[in-house]
Image (cartoon, rainbow over all chains, first blue to last red; front, side):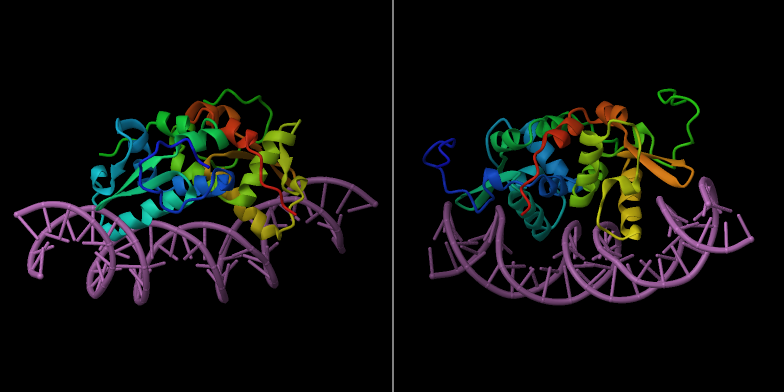
Length: 116
Length: 116
DNA sequence: CATGCAGTACGATGAAACTCGTACAAGCGA
DNA sequence: TCGCTTGTACGAGTTTCATCGTACTGCATG
């Protein structure tokens, strides 16, 4: 069905379909500071498509990261695929732009406050 | 300072300044279904400027409504003024469009799922 | 096959936050 | 002045969520 993705890739992990995306859920997922950082980093700094958990350089225990990446995926913001050992993520840009046009532009354009 | 508002109005209740608005906080406030309804109703159906709490026709106890309207105001989404007995709210459109351009358009354009 | 690595699953803990009842303050009108 | 209305303050009960330690799975590589 979802023929927008190229062939030969591992199947995505379970995720909501485009029609199932809920604005409240998406906003709630983005309202966490760490998850907002993750999404912004994916939007701004990923030349390639997917990035594994370690690429983000987040100083948190692994179980915490699992929690947040799962939250992003279950909210429909990211798609995750298994590449051997690693589980790589990317933002579902097309789906989100379809359902909530302007949301990702907003997140990417936003300037986070200075942290000393 | 904030000379964008006409004169002769009651002072707004305490609220964050434009520079203090935080994206995480705003998104978190909008991630509650009832608050999202409130903001959408204000954006879509308010010909006049301000609306009192009862105008929304929300079937919740008063103390719950106070909680949510306060949350919206403290997140910087709405401004509230005291008019005699009533406390009327409107969305801080200019401020939000300045800090997070596209956010309110997004909220207004979004179509909520059918509720049977 | 043994080691090591990426990541999950589970569970406990603590902090928010939603919901709401009750009691109270303040303004308006008869 | 006596209600009636609008909304707050406070507090309790419940739920949800973030955080993280520990144990485990699965895969790759030597």
